[in-house]
Image (tube, rainbow, N blue to C red; front, side, top):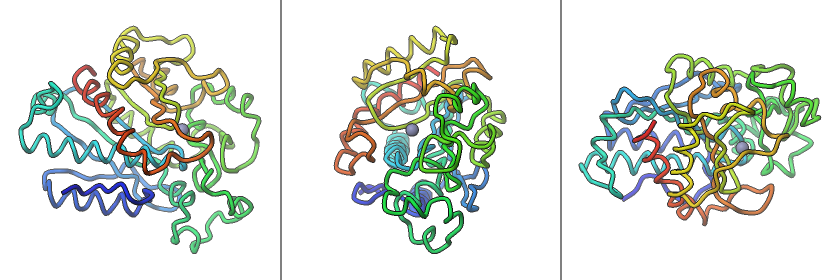
Length: 301
Ligand SMILES: [Zn+2]
């Protein structure tokens, strides 16, 4: 019987409960926090494995891309189960991966934004930052930003000024506002501090949608990142490519490549209607598309 269910929009509370149940089933699972969100929620992280290599996977920088959280939680449960049962899977010896690589996972970078997008009662009653989101009340399912109306994946110090110029949004709102300055948001700051603490060998940021894999930052094109990206492409059927120029700045991947010169990817999962969240009915299919990417990454990072 699985803990992670595919029948509900994936709010922060569901994620928290799922983590608690996983911990009951797998007592060695450590659940920690990289720090708080704007509204004081813990931004959770867990570690799978005990190897020296360090892989970092994060999801839901963007609120309406909460499907990415559900997908990575499905992987967490599957990987724990495979390891516990000492199973081979798709040709991978899971125990070897476990001993080779520590997989750090932040399943929801932007809990307040996800809760707002999904109209979680707590947020609506709380009324914090209501002056920012109130006028979009009938359209919150399109909300990408954090609760302060800042697009977290445009808030990193990697060409941040370019992001401002490209997006031309100068005040808080549902999407595309890079903030008053780079790292203006506590969520961004926590992600940066966390990354500097552990110095990952590879990072994967899950976004939606488009079935594409981005692997470079401007002219920084790491050969190893390309080679492994080609394997990601093969196992998922997704396309290894570059984002449009206007979306090429101030994201987590951009910052990580610029700062550490290590393979760092954005993966745009699934394919649905433009501007809408991916539908729950596609969750299993999307999971199957990307699952092996995580195994390849654990083996090759
Ligand atoms: Zn995104």
